[in-house]
Image (cartoon, rainbow, N blue to C red; front, top):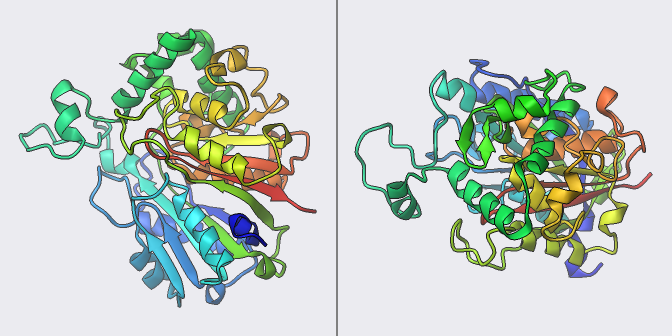
Length: 399
């Protein structure tokens, strides 16, 4: 096998998810345990089989509830004997932890890697406002890094940074809020079929436009919903995957490239971000094409990011995402490409990237229940990240 195709020696063999909800008031390590143990069981493995561990962003200082557990805590909790482990924030988006795991099993450093991501922002933030990356609690402090240049102008979080990118896209390509609203409306429609989604009530276009503005052009329904929850994914070497309980979901290709500046505001094309490079890399590594994909689970920290992923992954041309989604038909469960079938982070809850890979696996195993895509999909893409961060995986079910 050529070195450039090494990810094809890895497969998703099990997934797990804890309870997901608003202000669960459950210890985040307990949520992590629930997700990890469910994933191990789902794959038909035991804790003794797990010899690798990978997470994003690991145990680090961050806004309240942004991370719930790191590698060392989970290894100790589950009493794992590891040959390989990795955890940290400097990755190509949240799914970089899974891409690292694919590389580990493909090169023989591990056989079965447990990947996890835990958030508890809803409980941590309580009834107060959402925490921005540069939130200083209202008191004085000395900003550094990117915040040194953005905070003095009131740009304290990605809600503002991505909103400026959306406005640039609107300006260059004639994109409208009516078009962008279809991302939120589609997600809410799908969430209504997902018993685990946090927001399931129907939403209309009038509801969307009646919501308060957060950062122009984003209203409340363009922003993902903070929740508590944990998601776990098992990545196995393909030869080891044959002994697992389920049909392995082979990793056909990954995208992790960053070919522009690693900056939120100094990237060469703010209408596309690093998603452009990650998407290009993914298609460079496979003979499959966007037309072969049945399901797309694409990050929606803000609805505009999903539109950028649609363009970056070639489901529509650059600048055409607004027109592609404007009546919602192309992205429906029975549409040209079924998008965010579980409700995405806008309605199912912000599990920070891992929820999309979990849902891609659920769809490929045909376990989606009422929200199952009717074509019995065999190819899916999952993508996460925005700004200078982006990672994606193309999964294939080989029956």
